[in-house]
Image (cartoon, rainbow, N blue to C red):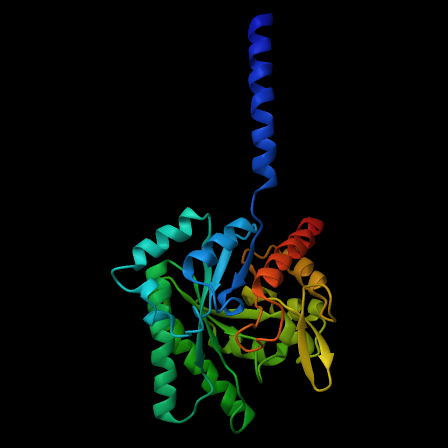
Length: 302
């Protein structure tokens, strides 16, 4: 406690000076939102980092750069450049939430399967070098008898989990393709029974393709979810058209808030599929809009 009036006034003045800074710091604290580089295929590495920082993101998910999906071959991650790239990410107050591969675990042809496993390992090595916790893979297709197909995916994930574990990486299977329902995904994750195998919840796919209410999905799979993909859409005939967040038929707000209430510690990552759908809104519009909308959802969830 100040012992004199002068000391009290000095202390009060210092507090008054500090308070606007403290208020500003609290206001600019980033929420756990991120976006996939799938959504900005024309952007160079510096623009990705600058845009993420300027729009209040805390993370980026690596899914190709400038349309090239072979991330381990990118110059930004070459042995003589990777440390600089890591410093650039940190200097922007960001982290890399996930390194997303295209590896598919359903392949039954031995040669094709070996190639998919080898590709996943390359991405695991990259994630380890970047100090990133997660690498995405696909189950993708049910090939042949269902039980055999599931077992094949399980064994593939176990194999990759064994490889990833010593590198401090977890392999996450995405709810995608023929693997968008909770019973199938839960069976796979339970059978894999590995601390280095978990789930990437693409909440759009489990709702639109899997026909599941998000509360049910989270109840069944919540303990396995380490990363998310979020996006909104409207139905167009037999297809879907991606729209700005909160303007479509996908309950993104409910998905975000239900997951946040479980104590989920991962990133809420926007997957704007600009690479595959060049007609949708430009990333400068859609990604900035996502940051505003989902930040609001998360603040309301508290």
